[in-house]
Length: 91
Image (tube, helix red, strand yellow):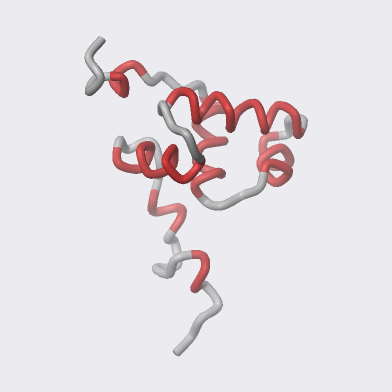
């Protein structure tokens, strides 16, 4: 497999895809566990598997790759038209 086509083989199950979305939304492992009704250990394992699936050394790199490849629903992240960090900012 060439170095440029690794992403063509990413196949995420429903729970992993949801965990990825929650990670992209900035949720903690504890919040992900609660949302998906799984244990904290399983939530941490999901994050680790996702980083491996996207061949990433960091969560930020994983999110960037997943977003570019269309695995992340950016509409859910920016639903209020403001990045989460600025959600309470009103000039």
